[in-house]
Image (cartoon, rainbow, N blue to C red; front, side):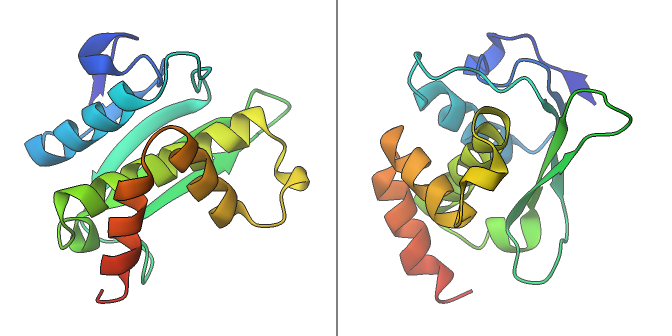
Length: 145
């Protein structure tokens, strides 16, 4: 497990994260995603872990879990699953990464109660960060998974 410095590899967006992966493809995808998020977007401080795992819940490529225990600050973990993530093209896999980052950002900066459709909100947020083509690639490829 590695604790990243705020500006290491362009990861200023994830300021308190412990990264659990040595997979170079995944690290490049994550670094590219966060480096392309506009600089005026506030960082996500509640994400404490980003992990690459072999398998996840059926049909999931990525998942953000959100928890608050005992009145403490919110804590988020982002998991990505190689069983599906690496079946996608680089562009579509980047779409997955930024979609999950958008979920984490929305959880921290916009109350979940204010949203009726978190998936659409995450896609709209990621598109506003400049990832429309990646999300379109993901949509095309997700049909075949």
